[in-house]
Image (cartoon, rainbow, N blue to C red):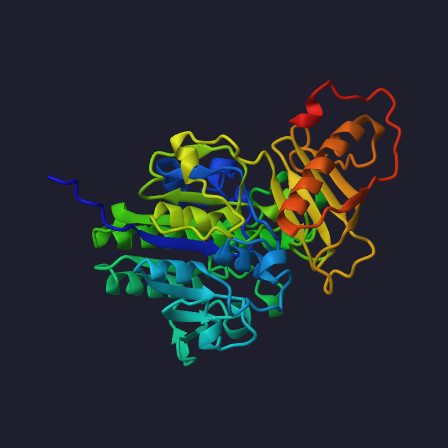
Length: 451
């Protein structure tokens, strides 16, 4: 008798906005903010070294919908729209027979309500282009597929989660792909504040502060209590979603991926919260559970947000479009890691035109001083800006760019970066050195530059 084919797994993306990787207890946060995430990551696959490919909202979101870097999607800064002919996750899943739904913040259209042709090919739509402008923490307003205004009750995280649970309940008999996009823990723009549910700010104000924020200050003392409170409510929402899937007996056949578009450095690296190459801005939480990922353990390979689309398609048995620039990390769980990149590549825009590469040991970043950040997406000439030794300086407090003791490291990292820019963007740039700084006795052992 032929073996019965397993049903197509459902796929849910639980997507947060501006969430640091070290919100999780698995990364040393002592406040027990994310027990549901930590349990999901422990039981499934924990991508412990995950990074955005563009640390600002719209470009990261375009990459996550398409599997392409920002210079290929054309969305290299906020305020740009995803091309109408872009091949999205929703279209790929629909062609494979999936129902598709989107709930929450989009940020890839020209206006609100988002016109149907700009909804990325999702069949069910309950969203807003810029959710922070049309809603408030206790005044959740989004729009349906036809552009009709929909007001939902409850704190915004809970309102979106309720909508997601209703969607799951209505689609439990067919395979579905649901993209659930929260605003939290992003700040509420018109207040420049991180408003958690009532009573949550008080729980966490004055508690633990990550070392980079403790050293550099920024707005952490003002905002961290509210930020941690928002993270806590998001994790509670994740728990509710897992409970809902379990209650309708589809949890074991559902792939759930949790991640964020970028991190938050609380005005320590520039005048706002992101748009820098530092780990506080580019390193993100990422965990997956479900078929293909359960028991995957803690993965230490460097994984990019651009790798998520081909991974989800691969795990669901849906053909991966050959033009996607990311790579499925599902084979890593089978021990097939040969050829996996030893660095992640990040494109920077809005604050500057820049690029960086990060290995396990080193972070190397360059910028284009003769390019306008809002106007230009790329350059053929850059200058060295940052070099960090993440082994001895994990919170990037000492810039080593220009030190003569680290010239070999800078040269090796420059070669890596030139290679990635050439591969991704099709242009081989020139990168000028940082001004030389004499370092006296300081030196590196042979081979350290290749780590």
